[in-house]
Length: 280
Image (cartoon, rainbow, N blue to C red):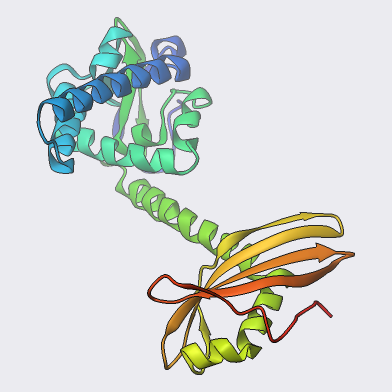
């Protein structure tokens, strides 16, 4: 890490040999040990008493926060000879530990990218290390020198907010993409056409017919042939049902094979007749 000039540098940052930072694989093995020990604790507690989610949460927080407050490391990190320090070479604070723990969940949500960053970062910091202002260093690590960075606090709350916001957007984007794939193809459009024009569905739900946002089902296409099935929630001014459609694709065109509806009592009714539908 090089000194930052002309950017209002106002915090001392300690720099170690790259080999003295906890590397990706060493930290991964340490996390594996911690997960195994926590799983054993959950299993033991669950076998000896009726352990609810609150008790398991207390055990988790005591393990992940308590050990770091007392020993600067979890048992897994201690076994592999590592501990956590602040980037300015001071003892980590409770706030840093808590922010680091919360941030680690968001490092994992983004397909583990926050943890993978350890392998490429010059100081082997995960995203949650950067946010909390911490290093993971090996026992006996010796700092080389100190430099200044443009940061007024150990915890970077701006990055913290950005990571949380970005991580929360990922499920939204994923759900939107999935909805587009499910609803944007010809098989779904043919299913909609069948539902809107089927008099038995109109009789059950009334009008106007409204479709649920997230249809369940799957679509398998191989060239000019394929299969698809959907479970579509349909509602109107008279009631609501779940419509099941089964389609087949031959010669590049979809054909409706079966249509049924499931009423509120769970009864399945075949409503494939009286209309037949094919892709025009």
